Image 1: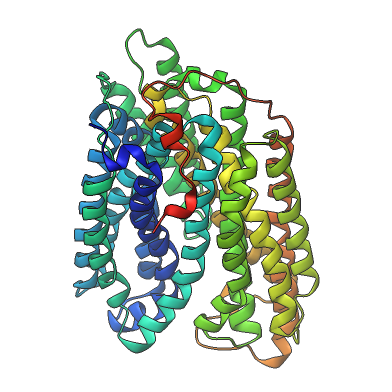
Image 2: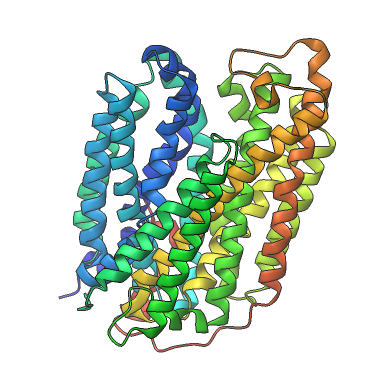
Length: 495
């Protein structure tokens, strides 16, 4: 007998989006709470930075492995395990009484997120036929847009009203609801008996750890020889990993045949550029709004409200167009639009710019985002074999995460360099977290931050070039799908 879930894959997607929303919320909500954490736990800036660094490290390093786990044990099962770990770790974060305990709980939280994230994309790949996947990815992208808005605003309200602990407490009821929704509505999909490549698991995890840690912590250690040695070691280990996968006579952890699909390879380039650009954009813009204009974290987040709102409204609509157009058209428009909108934002980053003049290009950035996230995801997964959906999702998300780390490290170094060039010897620290700058520092500070935003604008050109080489995908047979008339339920049925 056909279950409700099999009849309507949109309900399953809605259930998954609750957990996906929580992960994205957690990535943006913590930044607002850092000053309060520093003060309450009586620690230093470097330790507070590790509250985010530990999470990103344990999130990024295992993604290749966790994607494969979904293929082996079922994406629903691995998602539920990750969701449980994430929710319990959130409670541990909220109950932390010292910075060491908080950092450890955040590391466990990152592991839970790593288990969950590839499964959401893998389930979409397996329950929606290729010609309807764009609409599903569009709804998925809308959730990302809403979380981008809610995270900083909710973080500011909770920290101001209840204390920093509540940015983690809020995950507990959401996690419980997400768990029961997934149990009830997400289908238990067919598993595939993969043999795990243990040497591959070790090499991939070690290589990703060394690379991500080196890039992430480079500025903390002034890009010393030890950091460059660590980055080089990570690249070498990953090179050995790829070579071992190509020579494997058994079943490799990373099926290199995935990259024979031109669109999958190019989509990974595009999502890496997108991850780097979004991360690189946030630091200088929020520094500018808080240090130059003296805005509170909540008010700073509201300046970017048009970006999130536009993404949330337009992503489902654009997702439907993805299924009807050549795959290069919409992403190319998105990457070009994002880059041009950033240049527009840069052009109005003056000392006395009113907020509304900043909100207009932010809205266009939101529209560009909607043209990138869903189309890239749909193009990347279109030709994936069902038994490798988890592996493909793991690669795709790992690429995005490494791009994010590269963007964060790159813009941090560029901000410091531009500050020095403008005579601000204290670098980014001149802006501080405690309030607006002295009047005579505002103009050089704003100019330095505007110049640093050129980095994400240029990186986006890489995504533009990659998207221009997409080809029209093949139409593979889609085994194991629900009947076409049942899969065609409109996305507005999501409650």
